[in-house]
Image 1 (tube, rainbow, N blue to C red):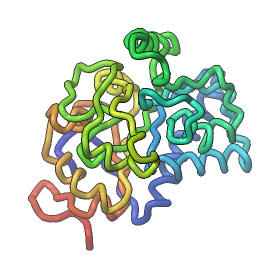
Image 2: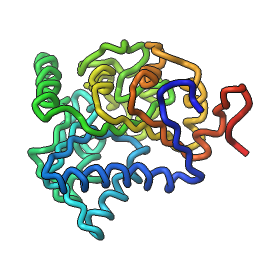
Image 3: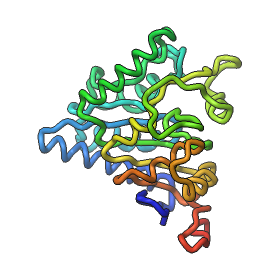
Length: 262
């Protein structure tokens, strides 16, 4: 087990992990709907949550999972892209979730990275206000970058950071470059801060695939380190890591022996 408050859930296959995360989200929505309460979700983009969203869409279509009382806040967005740009996170969310369930558009919140630079500070402050007005985030879904970022909190990022403009580092550029024409990849993004993320009542970080094995090993032994922003999750009282076998293959148990990767 990881030497922290983080719960570790490990699954043999990627699809098993995706279904487990989707099931937790679906159960939360169902239970709060039954109680007549809204659900506030913090959502991620990138390759990690695609399978989670596909399972939520399936549950909506086949089991009647009702998103009408759900409000969402996305972690981040590139600066300089219109919401219609195919590489924007607005477009990603529309493609994979928003357009496929009964989630009212005015209950979705994605940072407006297309605004003029002089308006971005106000947009970030407004985003924080909207989260507070919604009652805070009930469930925050995270992925993790190979450099340890959560959202676009690139290293170094402090544990008290708030929603803000950030400069994307070279690792992130390489991870996203294929989605852009030559020279089009943005250098800046807007992101929820680490402190904003940590205020969520439940956090689940999903790490899937062998490409995440090294950063999972680094995370296991690193605490409250701005150079590994995900390490601040160790302090959260209700957070979990959900891994498939390849992502967890290099983790070690408390005695120092390898815990996975048979």
